[in-house]
Amino acid sequence: MLALVDCNSCYASCEQIFRPDLRGCPVVVLSNNDGCVVARSKEAKSLGIPDLQPFFKIEYLLRKHGVTIFSSNYALYGDISNRVMITLRQFSPEVEVYSIDEMFLDLHGLQECPLDYGQQIRQTLWREIRMPVGVGIAPSKTLAKLANRAAKKIPKCQGVCILDSPQKWQWLQRRTEVSDVWGVGRRLSKRLGHLDIKTAYDLAQANPKILRRHTNINIERTIEELNGVSCLSLEEQPSARKQIYCTRSFGEKLIELQPILQAVTLYASRAAEKLRAQASLVKSVHVFLHTSPHEPNYYSRSTVVQTPYPTDDTRLIVQLVKRAVSELYRRECRFLKAGVGLVELVPSSLGQGDLFTQGQPVRAGEAMQAIDHINQRFGRGTLFLGAEGIKKKWKMRQQHKSPAYTTRWDELPEVAT
DNA sequence: TCTGGGGTCCTAGGACCC
DNA sequence: TCTGGGGTCCTAGGACCC
Image (cartoon, rainbow, N blue to C red; front, side, top):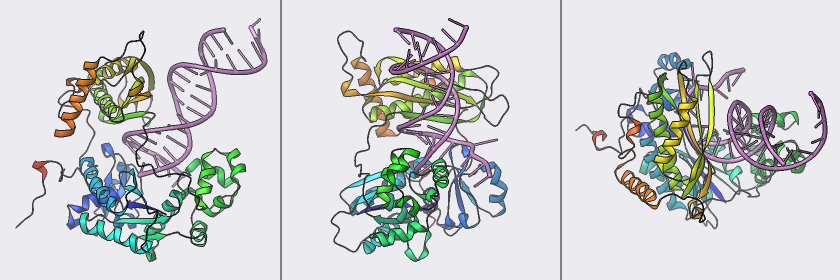
């Protein structure tokens, strides 16, 4: 059996930890650049605040109901997430951190009653971190996802749902739309709808071979998983990414080239950090730049540039990215967003190369290692390339950001006496 | 019904080559 | 000038996830 533990309204719950005055109150958290609503407390949901809506469109609604608004505070959420994951490891020796707010736990050989165990997990996380979670327990990841949804949606579950027999999961599947199955998105559910597959149950009973012809191979696995056959194994070590992207909207529309070059320098640096963290080298880099698709004369261009040799040297990558962006740039445009993708990667163990091709200088690797060590020890951004600039007027909007309570000495919460 | 954020992976379609 | 087949590379954009 597998458990999926998922934090309830994760970002909103993180904010409430240090604002107990907001417990039981409607709270929303906005995405980067204060773009969309990405987390809503239970109270905000029951006010009918929709998910993933542009902030400016529903700002009046939020003000009308006195909803407390936060910008994304990833330093805080990342730190709280770490604490949650560390606490959860007590409950299983084999786990997979699936996302910032979700973890799969292998409950293979569990002696205790799963229902009790699930409640213990919930109570421990609430007691130690003040993080409310839902727990779904089932024989496959896809069923555990389904169980987790039910744990949160069905009050009788009290936050824990066990699917340990076909009767139980079929009961739930009949009441679940196919679009709510993990891996079934908008397009696929529409296509399935044409085949008269409307519920998770319909999908579970469908013929995998026939469906595969209409869609793709992944559907076969999903069907097996819905029938309690585990096809997706627990990945304790996150597998190396095949591509690494860092893309961001600017805090304001940019007309000049200079601030755009600064921004992409930062994005390239972030991507290169991730590249080194997974011990890969990059052979080609994707760079894009575009204006707002909501404004007239939408302009969007991208290009792929080859590195002279497989590299993880931020300086070299930045140099290529800046040159590429200068070519994509148009004087008459108001740019909204840019991005850097490291798209062709090789393991650094294979970066030795042959006698006749150039390789990355040893000293470059040492320099990057030194930078990474310093930034790990003293915090991200302690050392950065001067080309990022100091003032950074392109930085994202975060008008409602809470303090970094747990990661900055000068922002520690104060307790009134 | 719509998706003003971001990440990863995949695919369609065109250009160009043999 | 048009056509058959097949491959690679590039760009654009979609699908799905959180």
